[in-house]
Length: 257
Ligand SMILES: CCCCCCCCCC(=O)SCCNC(=O)CCNC(=O)[C@H](O)C(C)(C)COP(=O)(O)OP(=O)(O)OC[C@H]1O[C@@H](n2cnc3c(N)ncnc32)[C@H](O)[C@@H]1OP(=O)(O)O
Image (cartoon, rainbow, N blue to C red):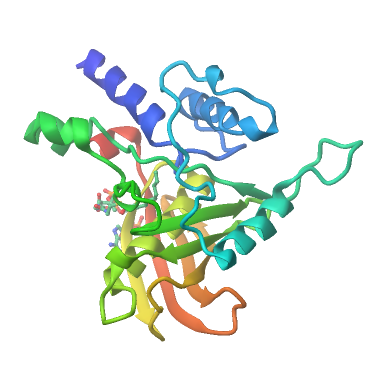
């Protein structure tokens, strides 16, 4: 039992970095270990991935690729610039931080363990399960810890069609869950979605780039209340509004142990 718990936590750390990636939130050794991995992924700023001994060089799906439109790249460049060091003399960084994004999540969750070895080995984070550039969910999340909010640039691929020429409502809900959940996890550690309430205000054209904005409303004990919006990149058009409730859980709950 102890061995399987250790194995589960080890895998959790190596494959679930986004939700458990708060720079300064302290949740004991698990988070400290995870911070090491997050630091490793700031390799563009000089740190090496070799800091992380438990995971081979994973692909960061949130980096620009050839499928990104000029608009997607423009939004990325805008927020990425806000992440950079402000002055030469100071180590101070902007308030924004680009989250890395990988395609593995919880290899040792209860269903994966007891249902099938195939599920264990092949499980992938839903939004990153298609490796073809531009086919499904292309997105990058920028976190602003000071203001307890984040912004996600999302370019929908051809596999996400719902109504002809427009994005499927389930795909929008998936992105809303991902972005609000990432914010809640960033601020409070491991969480699960208890409630997600969505109002679709105007359809999202397939292939377009939109912004998902999410902000913390309040925290009441285990409950983290977060809001979300989908807008056009210039924020003139509102596509979707949402509220979400996340509940802080211990690692055992996530693994079903
Ligand atoms: C790596 C990249 C990751 C990207 C982020 C992805 C985020 C995606 C997250 C998900 O999609 S998680 C998957 C979907 N969610 C689930 O499967 C959750 C299933 N439900 C549960 O596991 C439990 O019900 C849950 C953890 C949500 C709550 O169980 P608990 O036993 O911890 O909570 P409890 O029942 O003690 O309730 C705690 C408080 O929350 C309240 N609460 C719980 N569920 C609620 C609900 N649904 N609506 C309103 N309030 C709720 C509850 O009333 C209570 O309030 P009070 O403290 O004031 O009494």
